[in-house]
Length: 200
Image (cartoon, rainbow, N blue to C red; front, side):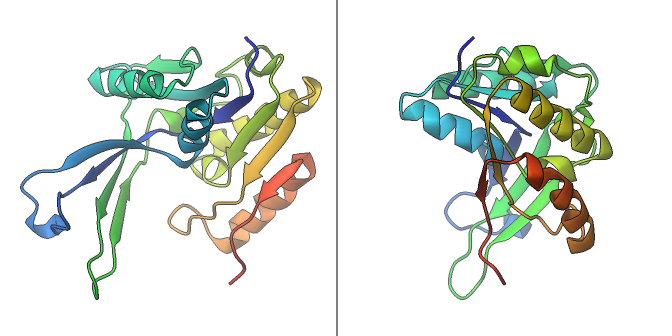
């Protein structure tokens, strides 16, 4: 397949109490599909570009939810691998209401996507004929195997002549500044287009 962009990452389901309610008093939760890397593929698909999302999903109803929602965005789902006995990462989000700030609670340890390994996909096959290969600083922070997969993905992108794009997207709940600095220093030489956080 020829894609404008292939994005590698983790889908999450985002559960939020309706109408600025608080999580501590929630009696119902609105369901949305989330994930920074998926957002890139979904938004470009909406703009008429051919995109694919590469990930692992649970081999259950929640995996079907991810696949169907991606398809509804126009994102190619042929590289979403269902994996038995895994879970979908979750983020609980409470909207802020002045003066209260918003709250995000992540529950993603051991998710299907965090178990992606360098051998989980035939990266060259996935990326053949692709213009842009995208991932970000969240994905390699998920696990050691995701880190290894990130390097395989970027190496294959270079072999296939893709332009590589990377969003720094530092998440302090996933790794320390020191860990991030060390890994990003190894990743950045393989990146053509970099989106950075604002400096703090």
